[in-house]
Length: 462
Image (cartoon, rainbow, N blue to C red; front, side):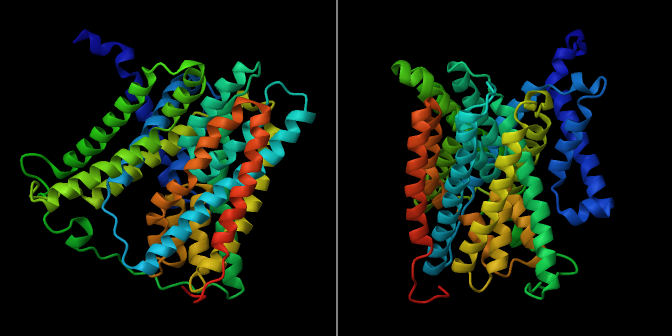
């Protein structure tokens, strides 16, 4: 028993304790301070900022372990994507299918646009700004931070840092990427709220009636044929086991690639990239497992439904909340001393371009609910899907428009459209020439997406 008195036995739990306490305090602040409540800033971001601001003071700096926070961010990203991939998703009609595909195209094209904006700032800075702590491909972290969130910003920031080091540069990519992600949450929330209030004052925004109290039925929590909530094993335990089983398969896949003999290209490029794509492999394997369970059910080899969408939503939400807190808490201001200028420029221009591009796309695609579509997409493309939902609930609390459905179901087409972009993330940082080639490819890809999104339609409301 004496071994449990050793502090090393509690190190991981201490980091979890810090995250949990910060989340509770941040939620208390957000609920009771009108300024924070009106800002719609997520409690998770407030918690992360609270930890980050306290880190420079006294013993708190030694309590928060940066490597552990980064590891927590990495794994909660993968687990959250697995939980989302395992959910049973249904599209109601062919029209909805087209709209979901178009929404996925908007998401992927915004990633490309954000990447282009980032590179248009960081490439000239690299050429004209004498700073050895700066990396020419740093602008590609804008779509990872704004469009994807702290998890991917951490993954690719770490990978970029290692590639920069191989070229004789010292680039704190982790802190740069995580700072973009934290700024994105603030941009999405504050700009979203300000624009919403402007539209209200001008009478352009129709705010739907809020329900006095939300009423739930059994159908909201489970579907027909599911296993009981608690029998020999609790239903939540089953969901956690499925998520962790898929994530174990993700680890085996990545570890298997790590053992392959792939030469210098494999060691220096492919293998680091594979480990950085844990969220992608989690999505693909999660979809495969969900399909396999569906086939077993159709053949009556599995009598009960084991997947519960409601509980998987809660698992994903918890993972993403913890990811935001840990990712923000992992930022080290000391590593950003020489990066303030590119960080401010990238975040500012990224916010402006994202705002106007998403607004233009939503006016074209959603003529009947353009603002509901805009707030949901803008919140997601500067933060996470949760931020999009938070903004959407302010004007469509009962999700009466298709905006919420589009946001949830666009994940798979966005992943398919955006996969080449992710490959470019591993190609561009290898050399300055590769980065210039990447910019050219992204320009062509953006034009193709714009032709698809803004094409003429027979029925303008379809």
